[in-house]
Image (cartoon, rainbow, N blue to C red; front, side, top):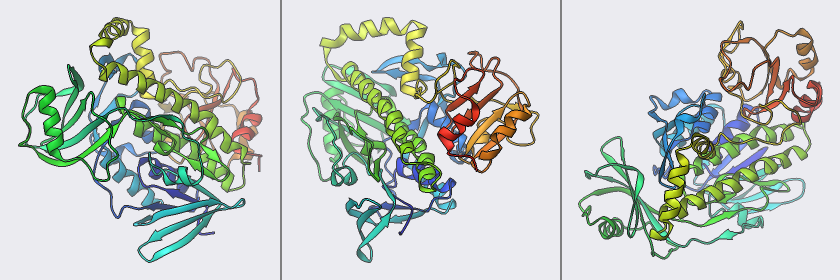
Length: 489
């Protein structure tokens, strides 16, 4: 075999997955047809949950100073994300190009094999391994590995070649996205609905202005090359009456509102993650964030199966957990598109939503949905409020090890938090010491939501979700450890 896992695509999903696999010691090859990073940044910033994910891997400091905000929107209607008590604020000004740079440097430092100018031509599941035909600088050759993951975007060759079903709706309109120098425009950070469509303006570092132009009635086009800036300027003038033709484009792109999701995220030894598995209107900047979280959910599971610690049934939990998340992503982006991009006929609906958002429970619900904080996996039976949910950040005292629950996850391993210095608990977990770190400490303070009140211990999966807690779980600790980390050694 040429590797233990082949990852196709070096975007955020592919790089995050490669990093997760390398943390677990898996030999991974990343194939990317581009010779170098494009430098384009369709995504801008990342959500509160992705902030937590990066922090759990010790990556946040690599981004330098991060501008955060608790102001967001749902379908262009302002929502105060400060109602999300205890959650991080979202990063607002980090271009996707920087995110990709940080992740690629991380993977390289971990020893990942990133092969640029390597284009996948075909893929075949041979039963006991996967075969990939690749065109590289030295010609066409074949690579083999036990598993292959397609992270190669909305037009995924992996998805098509492997025969994944990808139902949904085709695009109904075309929209423009551009970064431009030399413009002096008033910010429209969450967009402005106009009679003919919607425009968005966001100032970026270096004197660059981010433009999004959505003109209703523009039929979708399947372009082989990006649109010209003249097209963007013409659409802008039709919508706003302003002339921006003097601007200097850094790059221009287009996108549509197609909405599709693979019916399965795994077929045999081939899996999908990120845009390969789901495409949607980029409303609320959720696409890259969902893709990164797909990778974090899959990485440790795939590593455990490759290392022989777990059976392939663990890979089925990747689909079971992430497919519903993708389905809700498509639902909420479609709803936002209707609110944001439709004409005057939906103004009554906008007015009703505006009234509803004034109620804190509604704002909390929408903010958690867009931020990725509402997720609850069907991990374990029990009554503890944290089961299946993300582990909140806890500052820890009384330990010579990690100073927080977040820091404890830096190595991408499971973590058992012993919050009451229970020697018997530690004894029962000893058989999993090669996969699960035991941290005995006391929280400096408990979350305001009461989710950890009276809690003696929490088992945290490598992706940061609580798999067991005491008291409150219906299973005992060894059962939970074996369920998610395999038999004791």
